[in-house]
Image (cartoon, rainbow, N blue to C red; front, side, top):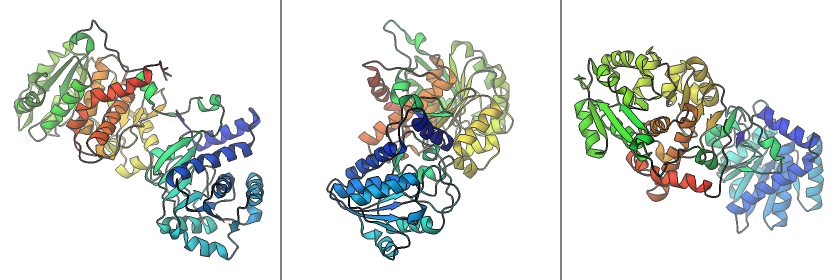
Amino acid sequence: MWIATTERSREIDRMASAEYGIPAMVLMERAGLAVFDAMRQMLPEGGRVTIFCGKGNNGGDGLVLARHALKAGYHVDCLMACLEGDLSPDAATQLAVSRAHGVQAIFFDDARWLRKADCVGCRDLVVDALLGTGSKGAPNGMILSAIRAINRSGVPAIAVDVPSGIDPDTGEEIGESVWALKTITLGQPKPFLFQGIGLEHAGYWEVADIGYPTDLLTEPTEARLLTEDWVAALLPERLKASHKGDNGSVLIVAGSHYTPGAASLAALGAAYAGAGLVTVAAIPTVCDKVQAVLPEATLIPLPERDGTIGFGAEKEILERLHRYDSLVVGPGLGLHPQVRVFLEALLPHVEIPVCLDADALTLLAEGVPLPAVPAVLTPHPGEMGRLIRESNADVQSNRFNSVQRAIQTYQRTFVLKGPYSIVGEDQHPLAVNSTGNPGMASAGMGDVLSGVIGTLLAQELPAYLAAACGVYWHGTAGDLCAESIGGIGYQASDLARKLPAARAKILESCQNGCESNLP
């Protein structure tokens, strides 16, 4: 599923009308019906609804909703945050139709408007149909009054297409914005759902099919939302006659005296993702921890100094590296000066695909060179900020742009971790993950992910596809944890053990055949 910017959304609207002959009024009718369906799910027994409408097509969607809600027996207040003479032609037509069906639209210059707006807190649901993707600048005047009425009401809100006051492309809050419980976005997902304040203010969201031609929706854009069938078509098959050597050998260099569990979690991620062989190279105390939780792993004990990797450790690894298909480096290594010396001696000689995570990324930002091989870098926002010399807040405010900057700077594959993790590589669209949940915001989850990606690299998936499939699979395992254990409190080790079940769930979508739209 492709993600549409404001410019692309306008182009789809134009082409739907000009080239496919679909009137804007038809699209507006379907949009209003889609929001009505969402409203009925939230209020199946009926109730009292206030719909705030703007002067443009978003307001026209709201008028359609008001008509259908009134017909279905809901008590409807329709508050127009504009003057009647300011309505767009299509919205004016919808006003006439809605009035003919009994909707009493109250405009801002009507004395009843403020009284009704002050009473929104007594309603069961409020709908934001004020501003769509075409709005510009900070809300003011009548629109701002409506946004404030929605937010102070404390009533659950549905936003039509985008919460008013949120920039559809960046997710930035422009002045004040609606905080929605649910957003019904039209046709295609928009960038605001995945970054900035929009990520939170959109609440739960779904994409409504309002009848755009399939050709328009399947045309590639700069970013795509990962889907189950896309990932299922790419996950490596396990052949009947295969042996462990055919299923990928992963070498993990991780852990220190202070963070010994990171190596174990990365190893668990690789093992439960189906690697044929998992080996951990670490200081002896870390090796002991790994052996205790994953006896199937093989070990390469490394020299130790001050609780971390000591001098000469790179030789122990380079002598054996030819036996492995991928390398994972970084989880829990620490930032001791000796770790930097170790990485500078190791990475230039690596000749297999590598996943770099955690402390390796921090040292990379400080000048440690990248290996000249396919590499997946998996920073969280703080690490990404160090890599591209931006603050954490700047990274989060425009996550798409941050990933693009990192790709341009380092010419490697990136995974910006977080809600809706973003995968990027030069010459490929950004891939936005659609799985996962807030319970995954706890220690060790990224270590497991590095093990999963390491396994997919070892099984010969190209870096971009390994990263994209890895984040989707990892998030699906988190969702299974939330279902079986609880939304908050499950651990990274719980998630690792759900990876086989998550893979099976993903592959169910291919039972009747699925297609992969390879980028």
